[in-house]
Structures are given as C-alpha cells and as structure tokens.
Image (cartoon, rainbow, N blue to C red; front, top):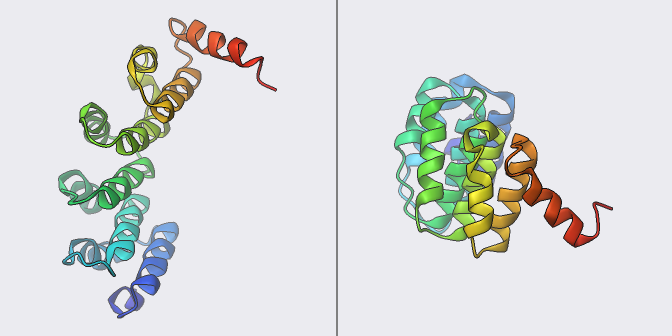
Amino acid sequence: VARLEGPDPRLQAQAALALGRMRYADATKPLLAVAQSPPTSDSAEAQAAALIALGMISTPQAVDFLLTYQPTDAYQTIARLVAFSVIHERSDKVIEALIEQVKKPASFEAQRVALWALRTQAPDVMAGAWGKLARQTPHPFVLQEAMLGIGVSNDVDDRPLLEEAIDARGGCG
C-alpha cells in the first residue's frame, strides 16, 4: 500500500494491480486517492491501474466510485471499462453503464471494450442484440465482439449468422 504513495508512477501501477489481484479491500481508499489524483502524463498508467484494481477488489465503495467516475480521456475510459469487466458480482448498474457506453458514438475501441466487458459480465443481457449489432457495425473489431457475443449467449435466433460466418471462412480450423 505504501508504494501507492511513492513518486514512481510505474511502481504505483504495479502496486495497484498487485493489491487488486489480492482483492485487498483495505487498499480501496488509497486506490481511490490514486484514481482521483490530478491527471498528468506521468500518472496516467498509475490511475488506469488503480481503476482496474478497484474493479478487482469490488468493494461497494469501489464499485460506486467506478459507476460515477467521469473519464477525461480514452485511456481512462478503457481502464474504467476493464474495471467493470473484473467486478466479481453481476450488477444491474454496471450492466447499464456498459450498455450506455456501447450506445455512445465514442471511439469504436471504447465500444469494443464495453462489448467485451458485457460479454464477460452478462452475455445473456445482449441476447437478440448481438446479431443486430453484427449486421449494423462498420467496424471489424466491434463485429468480432458481436460474433463472440452470439457464440457465448447461445442465441438461437442469431446462431445462423455465426454459422454463416464460419462457413464463409471455411470452417473453424
């Protein structure tokens, strides 16, 4: 925990992720301090790691912070979405936040990571929507996430779309 307060942002990032992997709930407050510190070019990695660690720890305080956190750049947005993906218990509020991110006309990379997080947290929530997304997106990486979502959700209505894509590629092997 002491390394979170040190001057080296790389050590702060490593310490944050280690505390997150340990699910060390007592680190929530110091991690919040790192995540909320004024952003600088040197602190971006430590702040992103703190956000992800808060997701790994998943205390109510950490999850509430992630839900209300307003990223100021793409790096923080992606870190917040990754944090959502590693939260331990399924939460309707987290799922709603991920769906809102998917709907935003932001970067397709943020949309892709939000879809990945949805797929890890609640693939069934998007049943029926994966196929629609696959048919409408112009972005190949978003299409990839949508196709994976179809496979994971076992949506029988969209299953033919996935089978068609596999057949067009010449099989799975």
